[in-house]
Image 1 (spheres, rainbow over the protein chains, first blue to last red):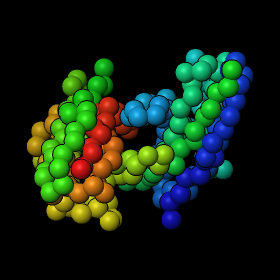
Image 2: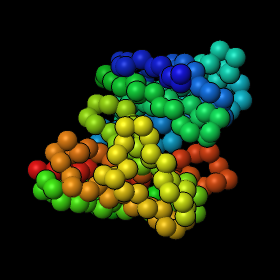
Image 3: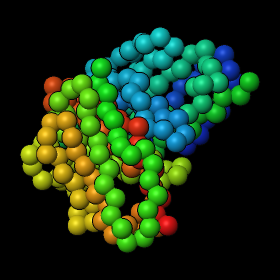
Image 4: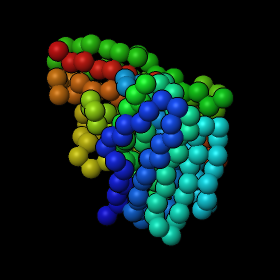
Length: 109
Length: 115
């Protein structure tokens, strides 16, 4: 079956760095997405990886290893506004997104 | 660019009535639109996928006669919750994809409360 695993909750300190891991198993693979979702709001797009390696975008970076079925989202210089849920989603061979349950990130001062 | 709007943003209705939610892509043509439901503290649950001009494809366990989806144009899809019940109360989110790209753009969501 198809499955996405990511930690339920993580806590980090303002100004620090945090890495949110995601492992996936899908029927075919057409890329890995990360979305940010604040409480009560819809998800917003953060990143898309389809090739192995690290993609950097400001304070956020995303990494993909297709052979390992593994991705991570790296957040640097954490700010209080980064407190949110981070959703990992893999696109299967039918271009359907398979969603993880999300990682709730709590930032402490 | 790539803005998706949803209307209404919140709605309260009485049990047994029907509610229509609109999803519009404002600056691109959405060849595919998706409807999700999200209960508190849970992840997104895909309800159905619709392609413009064709019938929606519903996920297992989603009643197609209860959740009517229409994707009549490249910029508009509607979800109608028929004979709503309190257990239908949830956060409904649509997303849209331009056929040329894989990214899904999300609407702001509609919070439905059925009393």
